[in-house]
Amino acid sequence: VVNDYYQSVYEPIKDNKGQIIGMLYTGVSLNLTDKLRESILSTIVGKTGYMYVLGAKGARKGHYIISKGGERDGENVWNAKDDNGDLVIQKIINQATKNTPGKISQILYPWKNKGDSVAKMKIVSITYFEQFDWVIGAGTNLEELEESSTIIYSSFNKIYLILGIALFISLMGITLTGIFMTNKIANPIKSAIIILNHIANGEISKANEETRNLERMYHGK
Image (cartoon, rainbow, N blue to C red):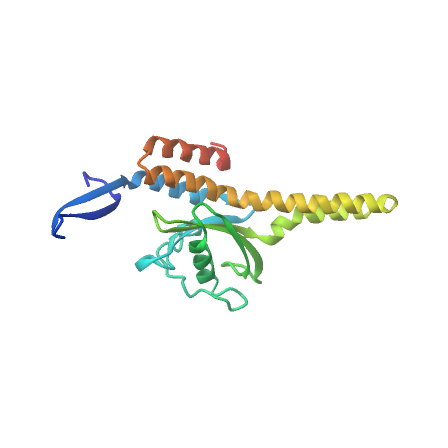
């Protein structure tokens, strides 16, 4: 449309006899969603984690819309299995689409990325944005979340004279670190939802500003 690509929706307009007499159209330039795509691709969760987007329904169901590094975009991963043999992508999509709008839930599963010699437990935060039919995920290896807690625990464990206090403080540290890190992998999704809502509502200037905020938050730009 006018030398540009748009994310578009078309609906027929009918008279009282059910005859089509016109068409209703709305669309937004994909230049903006391309900018959001780049922000998603460059967002690092923890040390090695990343964000991704999957299609949830229709022809795009189970296909990567945005994959790690963009390397698998368009690939059908609906039948992908985790290291236990479970259909993890189906589990992610089914869970996300059951969520109420804006709700973010977490899933744990063993996963082996390309280049990994063994599978690692992974935690992913997921949500569903119905207007774009996007299942948005942000995940990282569970060991990265546990690392800080382990350091806290082991350091206090050496102080035998105040073992009781150390144990209490270390357990509190583990709990608080876990809460902090779980929120951390959900925050990129929250930012993406805000941007997508602005796009869906035609609030382009607000979407641009939120995209810049996302870039500043995770990339220091």
